[in-house]
Amino acid sequence: MDVARPESGSALIMALITLLVLTLLGTTSLDNAIMEQRMARGNVDHETAFQNAELGLRSIENRLLDYSSFATLESELTGEGVYYSSLSSNYLNTSFWASVPVYSNGQVLTGSDANIVDQAGLGITMVIIEYIKEVNDSLGVGSSSSSKIYYFRVTSLGTDTTYTVANANAGDRPRTLTMVQSILAVRLNP
Image 1: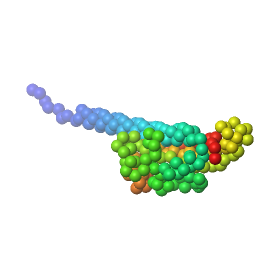
Image 2: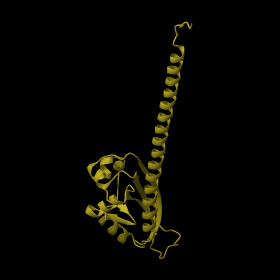
Image 3: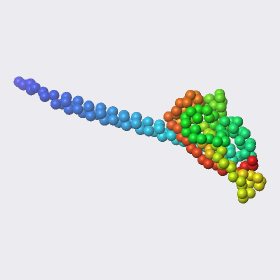
C-alpha cells in the first residue's frame, strides 16, 4: 500500500523564481535594445543636421566666390534675405531663424517655394552671410588694382529630418540642430 507523502511545493517555488529571473532578463534586454535604438536615432539626427549645415555652408561659400563685384553680391543676396551688412549675436536666438529663408539645392527659397523642401523629408538648411570688413588689396593681385578683399562670416544652420519649414515659421525647436560658421575672404571689385 502506498502511503501519500505531503509535498513541500519546492519545485513550484523554484519554477516561479526561474520564471521571475527570465522575465527580468528579458525586460532588461528589451530596455537595452530600446536605449540603443534611441542612441542610434540620435546619431542619425545629428549626422543629418551636420550634413545639412555643412551643405549650406559650402554651397553659399562657392556662390560668394563666383561674384566679381561687391555691389552685385550685396544687391542680390540682400534681395534674397540672407545678407546682412552688420549683425549682432541675434543669430543665436531661435526667433531670428524663423525669419531666415530656407536654402536648398543652391537656391534661396521663401514663402510657398520653401514648403517644397518639406516633402523631401531631409530636414532644412538656413544660411546667413554677414559682412565683416574690407581691406585694400595692397599687393594688387586681384583682377584690377582697385580690387579689395572683403571678409564675410557665413553661418549655416542644419536640422534633423523631422523639422519642417512650418516648424521654423512657428518658432518651434528641432530635435537636433547644428550650426557651423566660416570666415571667407573674397577678392572683389567695389
